[in-house]
Structure formats: C-alpha cells, structure tokens
Image (tube, rainbow, N blue to C red; front, side):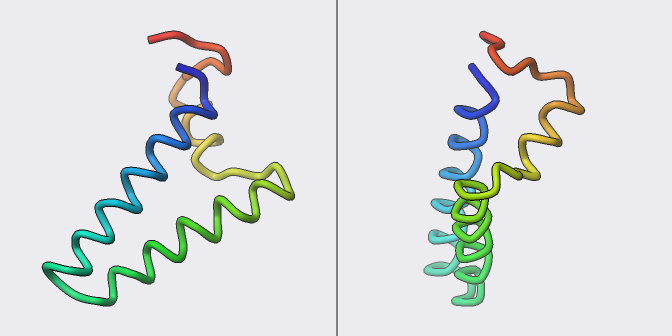
Length: 66
C-alpha cells in the first residue's frame, strides 16, 4: 500500500471511530471528526500531511506494497 492509501484508510477509520464514539459516549468526539476533516482539506491544497510525515519516519516507502 502506498502512503496515500494508508493516510486515507487511517483518516476513514478515525472518522468512523469518532462518529461511533459521539453516539455512544460523548457528542464532543465530533470535534475530532472535524479535526481529521480539516487536515484532509488543508492537505489537498498545501500538500502538507502530518500523517504522511509520521509514516515516512516509520519507514513506509511511498510505493510500498504490504
């Protein structure tokens, strides 16, 4: 999997997790959903993605296949 696909998968998992937590625990988990969405939105325009930086430091190659 490439870094881009991993970022999309992690972002999607975070969004689904925070939506579930907002229903079963506290509505304030929607702030986390908004944070993830805002990061995805800004990275579309700036190219800066904190998750991609973390993945690169963990040794994931840009075109790596798992």
